[in-house]
Image 1 (cartoon, helix red, strand yellow):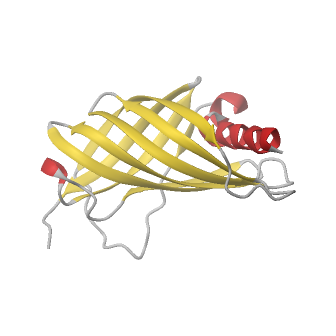
Image 2 (cartoon, rainbow, N blue to C red):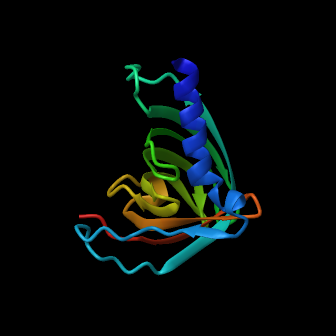
Length: 175
């Protein structure tokens, strides 16, 4: 059973993070704005490549038939965001090929276009029979140091097996 959960976790990670390479074309996983959040004008744009390592972790739910999995995330961002991140991912597969979902949180530590600090990114993603839907947003009020008041959304681009990001953000006033 542990082998099956690990296999499912690796397959789900592949669907989301390596899907473009498997489909043979570049794919951008764009964030969808959350209408409940205040609309902020994203005046800054950051981009660059990143590397990611996903490590399967023991699943909490080991019941027969469970398709839930868990992974740790280690990233190294380059370009406008020189940072590392560590995170946790929970995922679920389905019996339908190409359909799955994941949620994740990652703590990013480093420098964003000269501003040093930390912030948290929240991921929410589904794959609907091969069609990806991904939202990555900065958790409100998670910025520290020179990134206090950071808001933003990130897109992931996968082309020819390489990962990169586009990050639209603002560093605003805090209440």
